[in-house]
Structures are given as C-alpha cells and as structure tokens.
Length: 118
Image 1 (cartoon, rainbow, N blue to C red):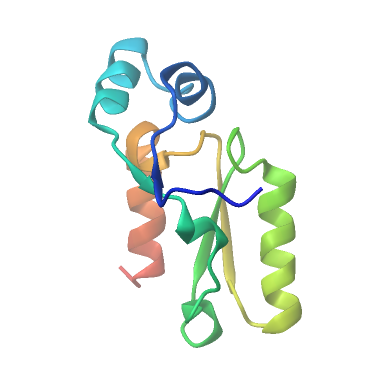
Image 2 (cartoon, one colour; image 1 turned 135 degrees about the vertical axis):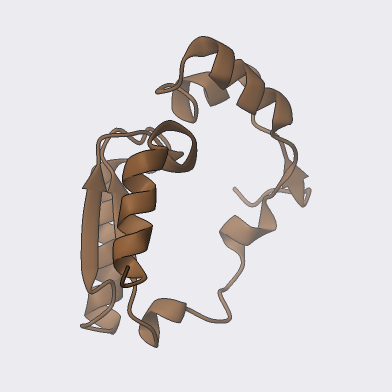
C-alpha cells in the first residue's frame, strides 16, 4: 500500500514496542515525546544516490531491532554487495534495538571512531 500523505507519526504503543523497547521506560517516554512526523515518501521513493557505492562504509547491525529485523538487515547488506562487492566493507554488531544512538551510545561512538580512523 502506498501512503496518501507525506508524513506520519508512529502511535505510542507500537513505537514503545518497536523503537524504544531497549530504553528505560522514562527515557523511552521522553524520546517518544520528542518524536515527530517522519517522511513516509522517503520509504517509497527511488534513491538518487547510494554513498556506499563510492565511499568506504560501515554497517552497524542492531541485533535486537524490531523495526528492521537482523535477517532483513543482513539481506540489505547482501543486496548492496551484489551490486557493489566492496559495499559496507566493515560490518559491526550491537546488541541493541533500532536506536543505538539512544540505547548504546558508548559502543556506537567506538564504532564511529574506528570507522573514522581514530
């Protein structure tokens, strides 16, 4: 089904289950309260540029992601590698949900520093 509006906000209950499940409840509530409308068309529109084709890229697999399950993440990486064999030349794994920037900050920062050559 193609959406008829350009933006949407996930209802609270599904968001708490799928997006914020690995945060303490008060933090999950806080971050949900700050979430707003998201572009729906971004999920359906054709991409104009895929940076992983041209620059070294790291894919961070979120092993407890309920939005993009780990098997689907792995398939996305395989699909990219079928197109460009050196795509996502580094793959990292975190035991976290969909938002490691909220739930697993220290480990994510370490991965980003490593990717930046620090």
